[in-house]
Length: 629
Image (cartoon, rainbow, N blue to C red; front, side):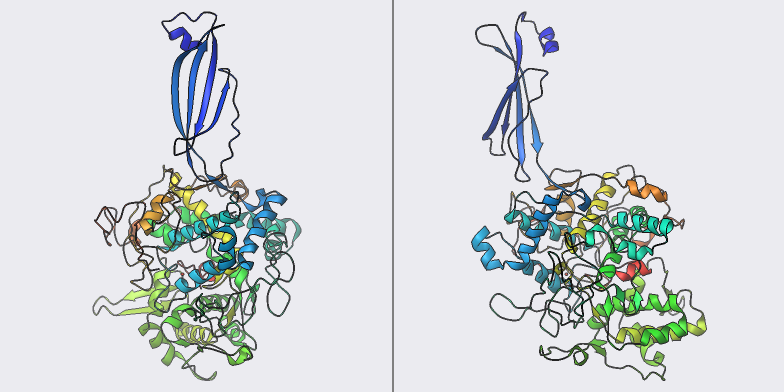
């Protein structure tokens, strides 16, 4: 104020400076007036209850000892109010309890009753589980995973769920669970005290009754029996009109058709068959995915080591009286057998979609699970060699090709093309020529012993409450990638990135089935490109932000997540480049999308038409395969 007076041509000697503030909403209506001296901060009392845009105006007046004052200057600025997503450990007990109880309410209150109480925007958990199960468990392909639509679909899906929580309690936002904190604590505990790192990991605060419950249930139903999530129900696959939903398991539950689990509650298991599931994401996995310098590589591979293992660690797989893994272990050794077991469980969806695995259409509730099993039509006897059946079938059906598409670095499957004939063949990496047939044989046999899986490891994964804290974690990593402008990053979105080829939900201009995300235009339906732009952290359109982008715990093992762009993966292998994208820079080789400006723009498309569900795959290491479902 004083400097403004000094610069003025008027004589304001003896005048006092006053500042008058106003806060207005997006419609221009005044919410609050404040005033004070030029050097005294003012505090507004308006409570921001949504992701809105406001205008803050400030008028500087000089006022004489008596009489009217003079307006010296006036300025205005735009203020954006956003929901803040916090890491679970930053919640107070009261905040945690409010969040968890509201989440539980969505399980217990149907759409009809919820809409009668909270209005037409209310969505129950059944709505979300059904949507994800139908999209991820479709018979043609997976519309949510195994392609470049993984991130955009799940970020839109998470936002839709967050807004459902806010219908009940407008103060809520989704949490994120940075599981690398637990990984770091577990490895430190093992180093300092000798405690098994997996046991230490499963002892996280996230798995207490107050948060999301144990990952190692001791009851025969493999479900939580105490705390907020005790006996959390799995819904029957029934439409509102009483007809059967299009995707369900044989017992009529909202589960993948290849998962004949008949438990009526959310299931978890800490093993994959007999093996302790023991692979969890580390800080180094964050670095590895951040070092990809194309959207194609980053968008597909973030579903792997930095994310996928969480689904396997919590979901697990089991089958009574199955001993195939024992024979495989004796024949191949524990390490290779364990990897094949992980890969086998991850391959159920592909085998089912290719018709190799068949599952019963329905089983009565009284039918024991031993009599309601998925299986392969042709499985040789134990003393026969399956290779004559397995190898041709896996190649002709496309299973080997899809595995090779996941394995962009050829860590497990190598694709070979004959220079003369163009014939394509596949081999197991690290397996000698004499053992190739045996490895294929064991893989085929283990896949055909189809297991039951926990809900987190399948197309019904949103029914497990911890699902909703996992995907914001990779969203936060994605935002950090996009905010790090010093790193080269090529945005090119080719078509056909799904391992199934053409699959709606994965191309740039595919319309996605998420509604009301833009509160200023609730009828807008977004494309993948629209979601990509709408949630850009550099822009002002996203309705949420993250509390920080700090990974100080990662510095303890010399992993600086804030400082990537090294060009090399954390393990010291050669850096990842754009050579596997099929294009180098320039425009996308895929669809250019609609050209009618009235139906499409970077924010999405206004339409009632859409097509659009969990597997987390890419580079085939144990970490990648743990998350495939």
